[in-house]
Image 1: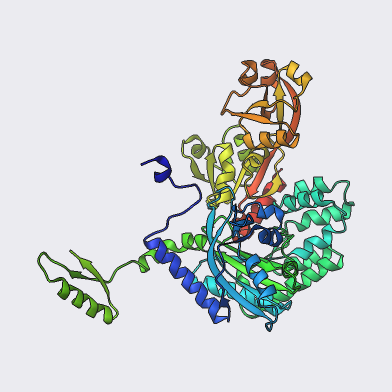
Image 2 (image 1 turned 120 degrees about the vertical axis):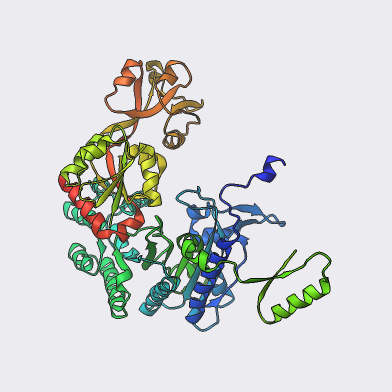
Length: 368
Length: 209
Protein backbone atom coordinates (compact mmCIF):
# COMPACT_ATOMS: atom_id res chain seq x y z
CA UNK A 1 0.00 0.00 0.00
CA UNK A 2 1.36 3.43 -0.83
CA UNK A 3 2.15 5.54 2.18
CA UNK A 4 -0.61 8.08 1.46
CA UNK A 5 -3.14 5.27 1.77
CA UNK A 6 -1.88 3.80 5.03
CA UNK A 7 -1.12 7.17 6.60
CA UNK A 8 -3.73 9.45 8.12
CA UNK A 9 -3.35 13.24 8.05
CA UNK A 10 -2.39 14.85 11.37
CA UNK A 11 -5.23 16.21 13.48
CA UNK A 12 -8.05 13.97 12.23
CA UNK A 13 -9.76 11.21 14.17
CA UNK A 14 -11.29 7.82 13.51
CA UNK A 15 -13.57 6.92 16.37
CA UNK A 16 -15.07 3.50 17.00
CA UNK A 17 -16.37 0.99 19.52
CA UNK A 18 -17.01 2.09 23.07
CA UNK A 19 -15.82 5.59 22.36
CA UNK A 20 -18.58 6.10 19.82
CA UNK A 21 -21.15 4.89 22.34
CA UNK A 22 -19.72 7.25 24.97
CA UNK A 23 -19.84 10.22 22.60
CA UNK A 24 -23.34 9.51 21.35
CA UNK A 25 -24.53 9.08 24.91
CA UNK A 26 -23.06 12.44 25.97
CA UNK A 27 -24.47 14.15 22.90
CA UNK A 28 -27.93 12.72 23.59
CA UNK A 29 -27.83 13.78 27.23
CA UNK A 30 -26.75 17.35 26.40
CA UNK A 31 -29.32 17.73 23.63
CA UNK A 32 -32.01 16.38 25.98
CA UNK A 33 -31.20 19.09 28.52
CA UNK A 34 -31.27 21.77 25.81
CA UNK A 35 -34.57 20.47 24.51
CA UNK A 36 -35.84 20.63 28.09
CA UNK A 37 -35.08 24.35 28.13
CA UNK A 38 -36.96 24.93 24.85
CA UNK A 39 -33.92 25.11 22.59
CA UNK A 40 -34.72 23.97 19.09
CA UNK A 41 -31.97 22.16 17.20
CA UNK A 42 -30.61 23.67 14.02
CA UNK A 43 -28.59 21.59 11.54
CA UNK A 44 -25.99 23.76 9.84
CA UNK A 45 -23.94 23.38 6.65
CA UNK A 46 -20.41 22.01 6.99
CA UNK A 47 -19.06 24.76 4.71
CA UNK A 48 -20.11 28.26 3.79
CA UNK A 49 -18.56 31.40 2.29
CA UNK A 50 -15.20 32.16 3.88
CA UNK A 51 -16.22 35.81 4.25
CA UNK A 52 -19.00 34.83 6.60
CA UNK A 53 -16.49 33.53 9.13
CA UNK A 54 -14.18 36.51 8.66
CA UNK A 55 -17.13 38.72 9.50
CA UNK A 56 -18.17 36.56 12.44
CA UNK A 57 -14.85 35.71 14.07
CA UNK A 58 -12.57 38.48 12.93
CA UNK A 59 -9.79 38.25 10.36
CA UNK A 60 -7.15 36.78 12.61
CA UNK A 61 -9.26 33.88 13.88
CA UNK A 62 -10.73 33.20 10.46
CA UNK A 63 -7.24 32.62 9.10
CA UNK A 64 -7.37 29.26 10.82
CA UNK A 65 -10.09 27.97 8.50
CA UNK A 66 -9.68 25.39 5.75
CA UNK A 67 -10.48 27.30 2.59
CA UNK A 68 -11.22 26.15 -0.93
CA UNK A 69 -12.90 27.51 -4.05
CA UNK A 70 -16.39 26.61 -5.11
CA UNK A 71 -17.36 25.82 -8.72
CA UNK A 72 -18.24 29.45 -9.36
CA UNK A 73 -14.85 30.59 -8.08
CA UNK A 74 -16.12 31.85 -4.72
CA UNK A 75 -13.98 31.25 -1.65
CA UNK A 76 -15.53 28.73 0.74
CA UNK A 77 -14.44 27.51 4.18
CA UNK A 78 -15.14 24.50 6.38
CA UNK A 79 -17.00 25.82 9.42
CA UNK A 80 -14.54 26.72 12.20
CA UNK A 81 -17.41 27.44 14.62
CA UNK A 82 -21.20 27.45 14.61
CA UNK A 83 -22.19 30.82 16.02
CA UNK A 84 -21.59 32.84 12.82
CA UNK A 85 -23.81 30.43 10.89
CA UNK A 86 -26.54 30.66 13.52
CA UNK A 87 -26.27 34.47 13.72
CA UNK A 88 -26.58 34.94 9.97
CA UNK A 89 -29.60 32.62 9.85
CA UNK A 90 -31.34 34.42 12.70
CA UNK A 91 -30.61 37.86 11.19
CA UNK A 92 -32.05 36.83 7.83
CA UNK A 93 -34.51 33.93 7.80
CA UNK A 94 -35.77 34.48 11.36
CA UNK A 95 -35.75 38.28 11.22
CA UNK A 96 -39.50 38.62 11.66
CA UNK A 97 -39.94 35.91 14.31
CA UNK A 98 -40.79 36.77 17.92
CA UNK A 99 -37.82 37.07 20.32
CA UNK A 100 -36.05 35.54 22.10
CA UNK A 101 -34.96 32.79 19.74
CA UNK A 102 -33.39 29.70 21.31
CA UNK A 103 -31.33 27.40 19.12
CA UNK A 104 -29.06 24.43 19.83
CA UNK A 105 -26.54 22.66 17.60
CA UNK A 106 -24.19 19.71 17.59
CA UNK A 107 -21.49 18.99 15.05
CA UNK A 108 -17.86 18.97 13.98
CA UNK A 109 -15.92 22.16 13.41
CA UNK A 110 -12.57 22.45 11.62
CA UNK A 111 -9.66 24.69 12.49
CA UNK A 112 -6.15 24.84 11.28
CA UNK A 113 -4.61 25.28 14.70
CA UNK A 114 -1.39 23.52 15.60
CA UNK A 115 -2.52 20.28 17.32
CA UNK A 116 -1.28 20.72 20.87
CA UNK A 117 -2.62 20.47 24.38
CA UNK A 118 -4.75 17.61 23.05
CA UNK A 119 -6.47 19.72 20.40
CA UNK A 120 -7.19 18.28 16.97
CA UNK A 121 -7.89 19.97 13.63
CA UNK A 122 -11.39 18.63 13.87
CA UNK A 123 -13.50 18.67 16.98
CA UNK A 124 -17.12 18.34 17.95
CA UNK A 125 -18.99 21.26 19.47
CA UNK A 126 -22.35 21.13 21.17
CA UNK A 127 -23.84 24.46 22.07
CA UNK A 128 -26.71 26.87 22.19
CA UNK A 129 -27.52 30.46 21.34
CA UNK A 130 -30.12 32.67 23.02
CA UNK A 131 -30.83 35.60 20.75
CA UNK A 132 -32.85 38.77 21.23
CA UNK A 133 -32.59 39.34 24.96
CA UNK A 134 -30.15 41.64 26.71
CA UNK A 135 -31.57 40.78 30.09
CA UNK A 136 -29.94 39.21 33.08
CA UNK A 137 -32.34 36.27 32.69
CA UNK A 138 -30.64 35.22 29.48
CA UNK A 139 -27.17 35.25 31.07
CA UNK A 140 -28.46 33.38 34.08
CA UNK A 141 -30.24 30.86 31.87
CA UNK A 142 -26.97 30.06 30.09
CA UNK A 143 -25.24 29.52 33.41
CA UNK A 144 -28.01 27.37 34.85
CA UNK A 145 -28.23 25.21 31.73
CA UNK A 146 -24.47 24.66 31.67
CA UNK A 147 -24.60 23.60 35.31
CA UNK A 148 -27.49 21.20 34.68
CA UNK A 149 -25.64 19.62 31.75
CA UNK A 150 -22.46 19.04 33.75
CA UNK A 151 -24.34 17.69 36.77
CA UNK A 152 -26.43 15.41 34.60
CA UNK A 153 -23.33 14.04 32.90
CA UNK A 154 -21.74 13.47 36.28
CA UNK A 155 -18.70 15.70 35.60
CA UNK A 156 -16.98 15.84 38.96
CA UNK A 157 -15.52 18.91 40.58
CA UNK A 158 -16.22 21.35 37.77
CA UNK A 159 -15.85 25.10 38.02
CA UNK A 160 -17.47 27.72 35.83
CA UNK A 161 -15.41 30.90 35.74
CA UNK A 162 -17.34 34.11 35.31
CA UNK A 163 -15.78 37.24 33.85
CA UNK A 164 -16.93 40.44 32.17
CA UNK A 165 -15.17 42.10 29.24
CA UNK A 166 -16.34 45.61 30.17
CA UNK A 167 -14.39 45.44 33.39
CA UNK A 168 -11.11 45.35 31.47
CA UNK A 169 -12.30 47.58 28.63
CA UNK A 170 -13.35 50.28 31.08
CA UNK A 171 -9.82 50.41 32.38
CA UNK A 172 -8.02 49.98 29.06
CA UNK A 173 -9.94 52.70 27.23
CA UNK A 174 -8.56 55.31 29.63
CA UNK A 175 -5.01 54.34 28.78
CA UNK A 176 -5.25 55.51 25.18
CA UNK A 177 -3.48 52.51 23.63
CA UNK A 178 -3.18 51.86 19.91
CA UNK A 179 -4.25 48.52 18.46
CA UNK A 180 -0.89 46.81 18.95
CA UNK A 181 -0.68 48.20 22.45
CA UNK A 182 -4.07 46.89 23.48
CA UNK A 183 -3.28 43.51 21.98
CA UNK A 184 -0.02 43.31 23.89
CA UNK A 185 -1.67 44.36 27.12
CA UNK A 186 -4.41 41.81 26.63
CA UNK A 187 -1.85 39.04 26.12
CA UNK A 188 -0.11 40.02 29.33
CA UNK A 189 -3.35 40.13 31.30
CA UNK A 190 -4.47 36.83 29.77
CA UNK A 191 -1.30 35.23 31.19
CA UNK A 192 -1.87 36.88 34.57
CA UNK A 193 1.66 38.22 34.30
CA UNK A 194 1.54 40.98 36.92
CA UNK A 195 5.27 41.73 36.61
CA UNK A 196 5.02 42.02 32.84
CA UNK A 197 2.03 44.32 33.15
CA UNK A 198 3.90 46.58 35.51
CA UNK A 199 6.70 46.93 32.95
CA UNK A 200 4.24 47.48 30.11
CA UNK A 201 2.40 50.22 32.00
CA UNK A 202 5.45 52.20 33.01
CA UNK A 203 5.18 55.50 31.17
CA UNK A 204 1.68 54.62 30.01
CA UNK A 205 -0.20 55.03 33.29
CA UNK A 206 0.23 56.85 36.58
CA UNK A 207 1.36 55.04 39.73
CA UNK A 208 -2.11 54.53 41.20
CA UNK A 209 -3.57 53.08 38.00
CA UNK A 210 -0.52 50.87 37.57
CA UNK A 211 -0.72 49.42 41.06
CA UNK A 212 -4.48 48.91 40.79
CA UNK A 213 -4.21 47.17 37.41
CA UNK A 214 -1.46 44.81 38.52
CA UNK A 215 -3.63 43.82 41.45
CA UNK A 216 -6.71 43.40 39.28
CA UNK A 217 -5.29 40.96 36.76
CA UNK A 218 -4.89 38.36 39.46
CA UNK A 219 -8.28 38.86 41.11
CA UNK A 220 -10.18 35.59 41.11
CA UNK A 221 -12.42 33.98 43.66
CA UNK A 222 -15.82 34.36 45.30
CA UNK A 223 -18.06 37.35 45.91
CA UNK A 224 -15.47 39.00 48.18
CA UNK A 225 -13.25 39.94 45.24
CA UNK A 226 -15.98 42.19 43.85
CA UNK A 227 -15.68 44.41 46.88
CA UNK A 228 -11.93 44.55 46.46
CA UNK A 229 -12.30 45.36 42.76
CA UNK A 230 -14.75 48.17 43.51
CA UNK A 231 -12.25 49.85 45.75
CA UNK A 232 -9.69 49.82 42.91
CA UNK A 233 -11.67 51.11 39.91
CA UNK A 234 -13.58 54.32 39.43
CA UNK A 235 -14.73 54.34 35.83
CA UNK A 236 -18.40 53.70 35.13
CA UNK A 237 -17.97 50.97 32.55
CA UNK A 238 -15.98 48.77 34.91
CA UNK A 239 -18.32 49.52 37.79
CA UNK A 240 -21.34 48.50 35.67
CA UNK A 241 -19.54 45.26 34.82
CA UNK A 242 -19.05 44.58 38.52
CA UNK A 243 -22.78 45.22 39.05
CA UNK A 244 -23.61 42.59 36.40
CA UNK A 245 -21.26 40.08 38.00
CA UNK A 246 -22.63 40.78 41.43
CA UNK A 247 -26.21 40.29 40.23
CA UNK A 248 -25.48 37.00 38.50
CA UNK A 249 -23.45 35.75 41.46
CA UNK A 250 -26.26 36.65 43.87
CA UNK A 251 -28.78 34.70 41.78
CA UNK A 252 -26.35 31.79 41.62
CA UNK A 253 -26.16 31.82 45.41
CA UNK A 254 -29.95 31.91 45.74
CA UNK A 255 -30.46 28.95 43.43
CA UNK A 256 -27.58 27.02 44.92
CA UNK A 257 -25.05 26.80 42.08
CA UNK A 258 -22.49 29.25 43.47
CA UNK A 259 -20.28 26.39 44.69
CA UNK A 260 -19.40 25.84 41.02
CA UNK A 261 -18.68 29.49 40.23
CA UNK A 262 -15.35 31.26 40.40
CA UNK A 263 -15.14 34.92 39.42
CA UNK A 264 -12.19 35.81 37.19
CA UNK A 265 -11.72 39.51 36.49
CA UNK A 266 -8.62 38.81 34.41
CA UNK A 267 -10.45 36.78 31.75
CA UNK A 268 -9.76 38.78 28.60
CA UNK A 269 -9.70 36.04 25.97
CA UNK A 270 -11.87 36.80 22.92
CA UNK A 271 -12.30 40.40 23.98
CA UNK A 272 -13.25 41.57 20.49
CA UNK A 273 -16.00 39.04 20.23
CA UNK A 274 -17.72 39.14 23.59
CA UNK A 275 -19.48 42.23 24.93
CA UNK A 276 -20.53 41.30 28.46
CA UNK A 277 -20.37 38.30 30.73
CA UNK A 278 -18.01 35.48 29.76
CA UNK A 279 -17.90 31.89 31.01
CA UNK A 280 -15.38 29.08 30.91
CA UNK A 281 -15.76 25.59 32.30
CA UNK A 282 -12.90 23.70 33.91
CA UNK A 283 -12.91 20.23 35.40
CA UNK A 284 -10.29 18.26 37.26
CA UNK A 285 -8.60 15.83 34.92
CA UNK A 286 -8.40 18.30 32.03
CA UNK A 287 -5.79 21.02 31.57
CA UNK A 288 -7.91 23.17 29.24
CA UNK A 289 -11.42 24.61 29.30
CA UNK A 290 -14.04 22.08 28.21
CA UNK A 291 -16.58 24.73 27.38
CA UNK A 292 -16.94 28.47 27.02
CA UNK A 293 -19.44 31.14 26.22
CA UNK A 294 -20.65 34.62 26.88
CA UNK A 295 -22.63 37.60 25.69
CA UNK A 296 -22.02 38.86 22.16
CA UNK A 297 -24.26 41.82 21.48
CA UNK A 298 -22.46 43.07 18.39
CA UNK A 299 -22.34 40.00 16.18
CA UNK A 300 -25.92 40.08 14.88
CA UNK A 301 -25.50 43.69 13.71
CA UNK A 302 -22.77 42.52 11.33
CA UNK A 303 -25.41 40.44 9.61
CA UNK A 304 -27.77 43.38 9.34
CA UNK A 305 -30.01 43.01 12.38
CA UNK A 306 -28.62 44.50 15.56
CA UNK A 307 -29.78 42.58 18.63
CA UNK A 308 -28.25 41.12 21.78
CA UNK A 309 -27.29 37.45 22.20
CA UNK A 310 -25.68 35.03 24.59
CA UNK A 311 -24.27 31.59 23.81
CA UNK A 312 -22.34 28.64 25.16
CA UNK A 313 -20.53 25.70 23.63
CA UNK A 314 -19.04 22.52 25.00
CA UNK A 315 -16.31 20.44 23.44
CA UNK A 316 -17.61 16.88 23.06
CA UNK A 317 -14.09 15.53 22.59
CA UNK A 318 -13.02 16.83 26.00
CA UNK A 319 -16.20 15.57 27.65
CA UNK A 320 -15.68 12.13 26.12
CA UNK A 321 -12.08 12.02 27.29
CA UNK A 322 -13.16 12.99 30.79
CA UNK A 323 -16.06 10.56 31.06
CA UNK A 324 -15.01 7.64 28.88
CA UNK A 325 -13.57 5.51 31.68
CA UNK A 326 -16.70 5.76 33.71
CA UNK A 327 -19.19 5.48 30.86
CA UNK A 328 -17.49 2.89 28.66
CA UNK A 329 -18.34 0.03 31.01
CA UNK A 330 -21.90 1.09 31.48
CA UNK A 331 -22.40 1.46 27.76
CA UNK A 332 -20.67 -1.77 26.75
CA UNK A 333 -22.17 -3.59 23.82
CA UNK A 334 -23.53 -6.52 25.83
CA UNK A 335 -26.92 -8.19 25.72
CA UNK A 336 -26.83 -9.58 22.20
CA UNK A 337 -28.78 -12.74 21.64
CA UNK A 338 -26.71 -14.71 19.23
CA UNK A 339 -28.97 -16.54 16.78
CA UNK A 340 -26.76 -19.34 15.64
CA UNK A 341 -26.48 -20.36 12.04
CA UNK A 342 -24.92 -23.81 12.08
CA UNK A 343 -23.71 -25.78 9.07
CA UNK A 344 -26.60 -27.01 7.02
CA UNK A 345 -29.13 -25.15 9.08
CA UNK A 346 -32.08 -23.50 7.53
CA UNK A 347 -31.38 -19.83 6.65
CA UNK A 348 -35.09 -19.05 6.48
CA UNK A 349 -35.69 -20.46 9.95
CA UNK A 350 -32.70 -18.58 11.36
CA UNK A 351 -33.92 -15.22 10.08
CA UNK A 352 -37.50 -15.92 11.18
CA UNK A 353 -36.21 -16.57 14.66
CA UNK A 354 -34.06 -13.42 14.55
CA UNK A 355 -36.96 -11.32 13.27
CA UNK A 356 -39.14 -12.57 16.13
CA UNK A 357 -36.53 -11.51 18.70
CA UNK A 358 -36.19 -8.15 16.96
CA UNK A 359 -39.93 -7.59 17.07
CA UNK A 360 -39.69 -8.06 20.84
CA UNK A 361 -37.11 -5.28 20.85
CA UNK A 362 -34.11 -7.50 21.57
CA UNK A 363 -30.66 -7.32 20.03
CA UNK A 364 -29.52 -10.17 17.81
CA UNK A 365 -26.28 -11.19 16.22
CA UNK A 366 -26.29 -13.78 13.49
CA UNK A 367 -23.39 -16.08 14.36
CA UNK A 368 -21.89 -18.85 12.35
CA UNK B 1 -5.17 18.12 47.66
CA UNK B 2 -1.75 17.61 46.12
CA UNK B 3 -0.18 20.36 44.02
CA UNK B 4 2.26 19.09 41.40
CA UNK B 5 5.22 21.26 40.40
CA UNK B 6 7.33 20.64 37.31
CA UNK B 7 10.90 21.86 37.76
CA UNK B 8 13.36 22.42 34.92
CA UNK B 9 16.40 20.20 35.44
CA UNK B 10 19.85 21.71 35.08
CA UNK B 11 20.63 25.42 35.07
CA UNK B 12 17.62 26.53 37.12
CA UNK B 13 17.07 23.50 39.34
CA UNK B 14 19.19 24.40 42.38
CA UNK B 15 17.91 27.95 42.65
CA UNK B 16 14.32 26.82 42.10
CA UNK B 17 14.58 24.32 44.95
CA UNK B 18 16.28 26.88 47.22
CA UNK B 19 13.45 29.30 46.56
CA UNK B 20 10.88 26.61 47.33
CA UNK B 21 12.66 25.80 50.57
CA UNK B 22 12.61 29.47 51.64
CA UNK B 23 8.89 29.42 50.83
CA UNK B 24 8.43 26.48 53.18
CA UNK B 25 8.29 23.74 50.55
CA UNK B 26 11.24 21.56 51.44
CA UNK B 27 12.45 18.38 49.80
CA UNK B 28 14.56 15.96 51.85
CA UNK B 29 18.18 15.39 50.76
CA UNK B 30 17.65 11.65 50.50
CA UNK B 31 14.85 12.20 48.06
CA UNK B 32 16.90 14.60 45.98
CA UNK B 33 19.84 12.29 45.79
CA UNK B 34 17.72 9.42 44.63
CA UNK B 35 17.21 9.05 40.90
CA UNK B 36 13.45 9.19 41.13
CA UNK B 37 11.90 11.70 38.75
CA UNK B 38 8.87 12.33 40.93
CA UNK B 39 9.14 13.08 44.66
CA UNK B 40 7.01 14.61 47.40
CA UNK B 41 8.01 17.46 49.69
CA UNK B 42 8.29 16.95 53.44
CA UNK B 43 4.76 18.17 54.16
CA UNK B 44 3.27 15.81 51.60
CA UNK B 45 1.32 18.72 50.10
CA UNK B 46 3.47 19.15 47.03
CA UNK B 47 4.84 16.75 44.49
CA UNK B 48 7.85 17.60 42.31
CA UNK B 49 8.56 16.44 38.77
CA UNK B 50 12.03 16.97 37.36
CA UNK B 51 11.93 17.30 33.60
CA UNK B 52 13.88 18.81 30.70
CA UNK B 53 13.50 22.62 30.68
CA UNK B 54 11.67 22.70 27.35
CA UNK B 55 9.23 20.07 28.62
CA UNK B 56 8.08 22.08 31.66
CA UNK B 57 5.50 24.14 29.71
CA UNK B 58 4.12 20.95 28.13
CA UNK B 59 3.51 19.25 31.48
CA UNK B 60 1.84 22.39 32.78
CA UNK B 61 -0.23 23.13 29.67
CA UNK B 62 -1.69 19.62 29.70
CA UNK B 63 -2.40 19.92 33.43
CA UNK B 64 -0.26 16.92 34.39
CA UNK B 65 1.57 19.43 36.57
CA UNK B 66 -0.43 22.25 38.19
CA UNK B 67 2.48 24.65 38.09
CA UNK B 68 6.10 24.77 37.01
CA UNK B 69 9.34 26.70 37.05
CA UNK B 70 11.19 27.32 33.79
CA UNK B 71 12.93 30.08 31.85
CA UNK B 72 11.01 32.65 29.86
CA UNK B 73 13.05 31.67 26.79
CA UNK B 74 11.38 28.25 26.85
CA UNK B 75 7.94 29.77 27.36
CA UNK B 76 8.33 31.98 24.31
CA UNK B 77 9.68 29.14 22.20
CA UNK B 78 6.92 26.67 23.10
CA UNK B 79 4.20 29.38 23.06
CA UNK B 80 2.49 27.41 25.82
CA UNK B 81 -1.00 28.52 26.77
CA UNK B 82 -0.46 28.92 30.53
CA UNK B 83 -0.65 31.58 33.23
CA UNK B 84 2.60 33.28 34.11
CA UNK B 85 1.95 34.96 37.45
CA UNK B 86 5.45 35.40 38.86
CA UNK B 87 8.86 36.53 37.65
CA UNK B 88 11.25 34.68 39.94
CA UNK B 89 14.18 36.90 39.04
CA UNK B 90 16.92 34.27 39.01
CA UNK B 91 18.48 32.50 36.04
CA UNK B 92 18.92 35.82 34.27
CA UNK B 93 20.20 35.46 30.71
CA UNK B 94 19.63 36.75 27.20
CA UNK B 95 18.45 35.18 24.02
CA UNK B 96 20.75 36.63 21.38
CA UNK B 97 21.67 36.54 17.72
CA UNK B 98 25.42 35.94 17.51
CA UNK B 99 27.99 35.38 14.79
CA UNK B 100 31.64 35.84 13.86
CA UNK B 101 32.88 39.46 14.25
CA UNK B 102 32.99 40.04 10.50
CA UNK B 103 29.37 38.94 10.09
CA UNK B 104 28.42 41.14 13.04
CA UNK B 105 29.92 44.17 11.30
CA UNK B 106 28.12 43.34 8.10
CA UNK B 107 24.87 42.69 9.90
CA UNK B 108 22.56 40.52 7.89
CA UNK B 109 21.80 41.52 4.38
CA UNK B 110 18.02 41.46 4.12
CA UNK B 111 18.18 40.38 0.51
CA UNK B 112 20.11 37.25 1.28
CA UNK B 113 18.77 34.33 3.25
CA UNK B 114 20.22 34.16 6.75
CA UNK B 115 21.41 30.70 7.73
CA UNK B 116 20.70 30.38 11.43
CA UNK B 117 21.63 27.49 13.72
CA UNK B 118 19.54 27.28 16.88
CA UNK B 119 17.64 25.32 19.49
CA UNK B 120 14.89 27.97 19.25
CA UNK B 121 13.32 27.56 15.79
CA UNK B 122 10.07 29.42 16.52
CA UNK B 123 11.71 32.42 18.18
CA UNK B 124 14.39 32.64 15.47
CA UNK B 125 11.95 32.45 12.58
CA UNK B 126 9.76 35.10 14.18
CA UNK B 127 12.72 37.42 14.81
CA UNK B 128 14.11 37.30 11.25
CA UNK B 129 10.74 37.35 9.52
CA UNK B 130 9.71 40.46 11.43
CA UNK B 131 12.77 42.15 9.98
CA UNK B 132 11.97 41.01 6.48
CA UNK B 133 14.95 38.69 6.35
CA UNK B 134 14.45 35.27 4.77
CA UNK B 135 15.76 32.58 7.09
CA UNK B 136 17.13 29.10 6.57
CA UNK B 137 16.85 27.24 9.86
CA UNK B 138 19.34 24.67 11.04
CA UNK B 139 17.86 23.14 14.16
CA UNK B 140 20.52 21.68 16.48
CA UNK B 141 20.10 20.27 19.96
CA UNK B 142 23.43 21.31 21.48
CA UNK B 143 26.85 22.98 20.97
CA UNK B 144 25.20 25.51 18.72
CA UNK B 145 28.27 27.79 18.91
CA UNK B 146 30.15 25.39 16.66
CA UNK B 147 27.96 26.12 13.67
CA UNK B 148 29.34 29.54 12.63
CA UNK B 149 32.88 28.52 13.58
CA UNK B 150 32.75 25.67 11.09
CA UNK B 151 30.78 27.63 8.52
CA UNK B 152 27.62 25.59 8.93
CA UNK B 153 25.65 28.79 9.51
CA UNK B 154 26.13 32.58 9.41
CA UNK B 155 24.44 33.18 12.74
CA UNK B 156 23.18 31.41 15.81
CA UNK B 157 20.28 32.22 18.10
CA UNK B 158 21.08 31.00 21.58
CA UNK B 159 20.89 31.68 25.29
CA UNK B 160 23.78 33.63 26.81
CA UNK B 161 24.41 33.88 30.54
CA UNK B 162 27.96 35.23 30.91
CA UNK B 163 29.00 35.28 27.25
CA UNK B 164 32.01 33.13 27.99
CA UNK B 165 31.18 30.34 25.54
CA UNK B 166 30.67 32.89 22.78
CA UNK B 167 33.97 34.64 23.52
CA UNK B 168 35.97 31.44 23.72
CA UNK B 169 34.64 30.41 20.33
CA UNK B 170 35.35 33.80 18.77
CA UNK B 171 31.72 34.87 18.42
CA UNK B 172 30.09 38.21 19.22
CA UNK B 173 26.55 39.27 19.99
CA UNK B 174 24.80 40.85 17.00
CA UNK B 175 21.48 41.64 18.70
CA UNK B 176 19.53 40.78 21.83
CA UNK B 177 16.15 39.21 21.09
CA UNK B 178 14.83 39.06 24.62
CA UNK B 179 15.85 38.91 28.25
CA UNK B 180 14.92 35.84 30.19
CA UNK B 181 14.47 34.95 33.86
CA UNK B 182 12.90 32.00 35.61
CA UNK B 183 9.12 32.14 35.76
CA UNK B 184 6.42 30.45 37.77
CA UNK B 185 3.80 29.15 35.37
CA UNK B 186 0.37 27.77 36.27
CA UNK B 187 -2.08 25.59 34.39
CA UNK B 188 -5.26 27.45 33.45
CA UNK B 189 -7.63 24.85 34.91
CA UNK B 190 -5.63 24.37 38.12
CA UNK B 191 -5.62 28.12 38.65
CA UNK B 192 -9.37 27.91 39.29
CA UNK B 193 -9.87 24.32 40.44
CA UNK B 194 -7.15 24.55 43.10
CA UNK B 195 -7.43 28.30 43.57
CA UNK B 196 -6.72 28.49 47.31
CA UNK B 197 -3.65 26.25 47.03
CA UNK B 198 -2.31 28.00 43.94
CA UNK B 199 -2.84 31.44 45.52
CA UNK B 200 -0.95 30.21 48.59
CA UNK B 201 1.90 28.93 46.39
CA UNK B 202 2.19 32.22 44.48
CA UNK B 203 2.08 34.24 47.69
CA UNK B 204 4.66 32.19 49.56
CA UNK B 205 7.05 32.18 46.58
CA UNK B 206 6.60 35.93 46.15
CA UNK B 207 7.48 36.52 49.79
CA UNK B 208 10.55 34.30 49.50
CA UNK B 209 11.96 36.15 46.49
